[in-house]
Image (cartoon, rainbow, N blue to C red; front, side):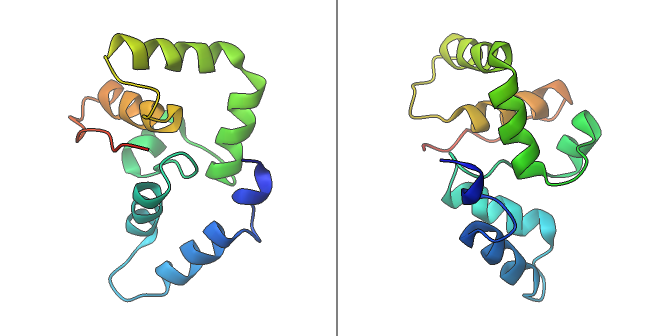
Length: 114
């Protein structure tokens, strides 16, 4: 996967835009629906993540850049996944989502496979 999978012209971003136009589906719900459908591609961004990291700009691209530039972060996420007894079928993006939630004192739901 590369940046074109999540940039402004990507099908994922276009779907996010369309979901946001549906009455009753706000940005967070749209993002969570996409993250559930594509857990290796789309990270969850909600109020808990915002408080923890205060991302600026495009969250999907920012996370992708951060993971590319910080192999130590990738290694730590792999350690967390292994220490938690999770298999490689659980994406590092999902490990990050749950780690942020746990650091914020919120009990997460079980990670989705994918």
